[in-house]
Amino acid sequence: MSDSDLLAAIRDSGLLDSPEAQDGVVTGRAHLAAAVADVTVVVDPDDEPVDPAALVGAVSRILDITEADWTSIVDEVATEVEDAVGDEEVAEPVDLRTDLAISSITVLPDATLLSFAAPRQFPDSWISVQLDEELAVDDLSVDPISED
Image (tube, rainbow, N blue to C red; front, side, top):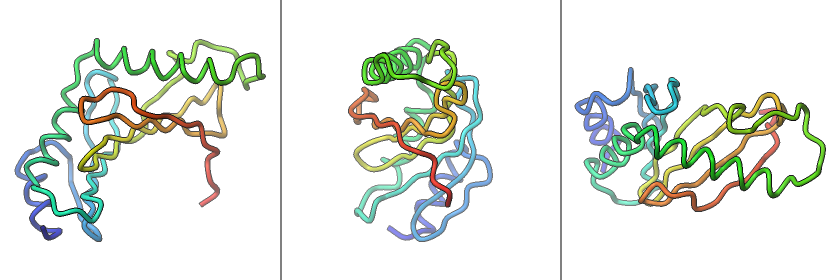
């Protein structure tokens, strides 16, 4: 698959605003209605031979997620982070469910990655979440924001 095949498929889908391709990866902006947020979407074939239609389908699935399913993901992420943090001090003790703000979505052939900011509780970190092909939380981490 060439850059142009994936880019053409993404453009034809109308899912991303002003998609651009570089080194096989397509990037654009989209509205995630369930989160009431505009996000950066990265579609990365991860150097695997994949059908552009399959990646377009994966983008469509995450962008079309229901509000109930989105709330379930946010709740699971918040619960797991709160359990991991325990009694450790956070910048501002607020309900993480209301602090989480989706920043970007990366769609890979076998997973979807979400990047959240939590500016009040974790102002110097990103919360990275990996969803499996069924959009269930598979893994998560809280990582410092890099200076790069």
